[in-house]
Length: 199
Image (cartoon, rainbow, N blue to C red):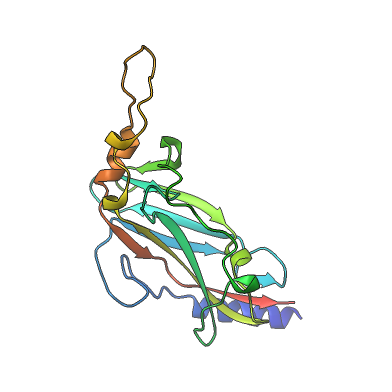
């Protein structure tokens, strides 16, 4: 059993060389991106178990940029995981369809849901993408993470609710939103992370 586990881990390391460069999308089109996105974490998972992966975003531009973690107006500003099997077939979601839907008219993202990255600064978070996919069974799977953002679709500060901060008549301030509106359009995919699913 130990010999098999060692073989699997060695094979995983061999298969997990980065497949996508900075700013390169899954369809092969290369573009300069202000964000570098990399994932890492577990390489061996068990059926029914969690898949804990770490995502690291790095600001590769010379100016501050903002990351929105939720939909904002009509902006599809979020992260999307993708998992394929050894034949490059995309895994479908469980139960035959999406488990949730996002209302794009629910209102703009609040300031606390917008994160500003200074040049060369990193932001890390951990996620379990396995809950959104139906695995075929034991074997190798390739995981990628994609981040898309278009500032042209974001609600502007002028469209935000007029709230008083402090003294009556004081206009609300949205400094993170202003940086978000000045952030360049982003469509970047991570490296490919290979995992093995076992019993």
